[in-house]
Amino acid sequence: MRIIPHHATTTRRFFLTGVGSFVGSFGVAPAFILRPAAATPASMAAAIHEVVGQAAVRQGKVKLDIPPLVENGNAVSLTVSVDSPMTESDYVKSVHILNEKNPQSNVTIFHLGPRAGRARVSTRIRLANSQTVVAIAHLSDDSFWSDSVDVMVTLAACLEDLR
Amino acid sequence: MARALINVPRKARRGEIVEIKTLVSHPMETGYRRDNIGNPIPRDIISRFVCMYNGTEVFRADLFPAVAANPFLSFFTVATESGTLEFQWTDDQDNTQTASASIEVE
Image (tube, rainbow over all chains, first blue to last red):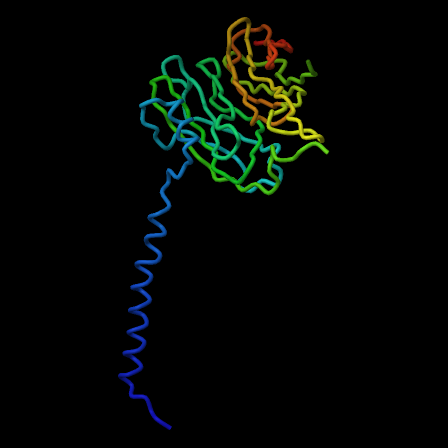
């Protein structure tokens, strides 16, 4: 029986860890980089552009509440709230709900004002597919804030025909 | 058009933020579905909802086909004075459904 010298095993182990980290650095990192936060299809990007125009959309202030896993896409409960004092000088003008993969990008537009008291609205929507839902709030100082949620849908809406 | 359900607190303190819930029965036909012989079913949705508090608009919503059948909306308003809250739903054919509720502010 041949005894492998000690230094040979350490070299092999050293070599494998070296290869592993090499592959890891090239295989994992680009996959991470190739998934940008703004991976929105063109239709939704166009819908967002229609809402905000040239203004910048910042993350924060808005909280979009949708269950991450939905069984029935025909009625998905949604709550959107905006962190705003809702006074005469500082309030939420409107909240736009947009989606990626329904036949139409718009879902609903809520128009609020200082009389609303609290910027929180709930409704139920339809989702045709697993997709990202975006809420964009238009504040009284004409700034735009957004939040997005990825939703998995098991039974899609819009696709069923009448039998 | 259809039956509407609304939920408004009967009494509130002045300045209190109250929650209002509304539900109206409506198929919200998207216009993207087909019937059993393959003809497209025409779109029929409620496209607009307005809530007026003693004649002043406090909440308005534009609805699209992606809103579920029997649209439910819940929102808030400040109880400023005693009076009535009027709700109006308008569909694609400009048919309207109205409902109202009174609120007593102390």
